[in-house]
Amino acid sequence: MKALVLEKQGALSLQDIDPPGALGPDDVRIAVHTVGICGSDVHYVTHGRIGGYVVEEPMVLGHEASGRVVEVGRNVTTLAPGDRVCMEPGVPDLTSRETRLGLYNVDRKVTFWATPPVHGCLTPEVTHPAAFTHRLPDSVSFAEGALVEPFAIGLQAATKAGIRPGDVAVVCGAGTIGVMVALAALAGGCSRVLLADPRADKLAVVSGYDGIEPVHLGAQDLPEAVRRATGGWGANILFEASGSAAAYDGLFDLLCPGGAAVLVGCPTGPVGLDVIAAQAKEARIETVFRYANIFDRALALIGSGKVNLKPLISAVYPFDDAVAAVRRAADGRPGDIKLMIRVAEDAEPTR
Image (tube, rainbow, N blue to C red; front, top):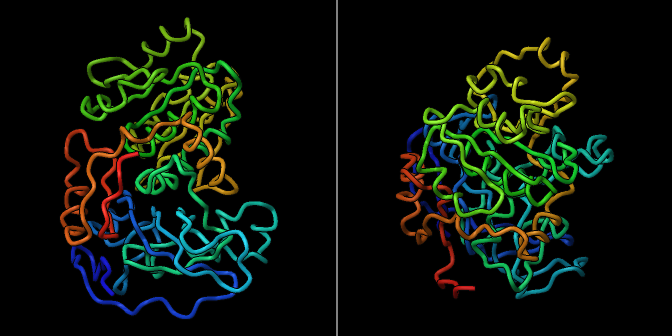
């Protein structure tokens, strides 16, 4: 069957691969419907590596996915053929110490789709553990189901922040993850979220969300915007979601005493951190790596209608045009937030 394969840095094509192997007793076989293009997919295409994860042999891309169950293993009782589902792409070693502590996102033995050398899901059919496969509510489309994965990162960040009702938050970076963090912060109880980015086109996409206040860097001064929003007190929470080293300059100046800095974005190298400035405010520092025990909560928020992700879907490409879709994602066109690939031939009815 066909798959979107990254052969090596810059070399991307649709190729024939072997179908999934035998179905395990605790697994489900899934006909993939929609897959979101993640920044990590683009990074592997353009750079061939992310940190110590290096593309050394051909790898199928894709990890943000939804689909329909076509077969279940003999031990599976929670899902049935025909169920519409989304899939949590990281499968840990269930016996590891990290997993037993509830930290399966940092399990050193985790297998995560489209992270070398593990193949991703941009192919018509995959097998996956039922424990990491979640049934979609009727109100959630396949496209929205493919957005549960990035929203789970935002919800992990909001959870780590320890939001209290009425908090004011700042999010640096209006890419997909920054927007997901902003929406999760509002859902978690923040009264206002200042979303800062140097690109006005990115901010325009979120201008319709109640509670999100775009701050166009360059045209507006972020410290001044925070002072106005908080009466000079400072933000309760700062989410760094840009991955830019420059975002760390004066980072703690934006926080109120006792505030929290939550580091979500992944810088390309070491960054400077003003420890004295953090200590002077007894600021709390939290870090985020993927998510754990949060996927079902993310799906519940989307299914309830409290979080609307539809405006973030910029375009959906048919599978035959998957290479063009990834190339567009790499171009970073103005206004693009999330590009998707529809693997299934059937177009989904509007919900």
